[in-house]
Figure 1 (cartoon, rainbow, N blue to C red):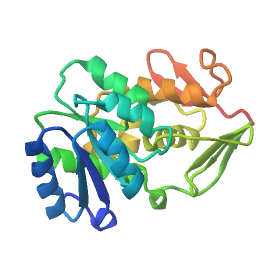
Figure 2: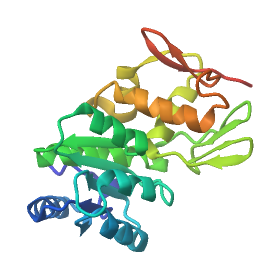
Figure 3: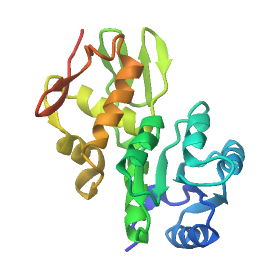
Length: 236
């Protein structure tokens, strides 16, 4: 059975890697699953392709000539919150954490299987699909979450979140006061297929706090329950 479902057929995937063998392999596989694909071999070319074609998701290598994956994320996140999955050959965990901290949504480590990659794409696209989200607006103090519009505002100013950040915030805010472990958060967001590192949740939480908290060091919305996980506190 195809890994992607009908909701994701015809989605446009931008594949960014300086190795032709990788882009050909991924392109052929994703095309066979009903995705459309475009390719780029470095960050500069990827920015041009993204601005012209507006991909639904980006598969991004880190180590590339001219502009690497980290620099691409910095520039791209100024313009778009389209989801990004890192394709990294590096085994150092710090590189994955840096990429997530800059605004990537997930990662797979080379060498990876095509079925694994397709499952990650499906999970990330699902997180960014407004049709699967409960549409009730959440208002907590000066923080407003509109699931239907995929928007978050603070003090009437819109805040740009990545799909992962949005889903993480929504998951916590829909059940204020409940303490979620990192494993439970990943399970809520990605379902039973998740296998991301639980500690990457810490990175996304840190990014969220910078964006929605007046004082990220003393958060009033997303609070840490030491030794357990996180909870959302209603400030109404």
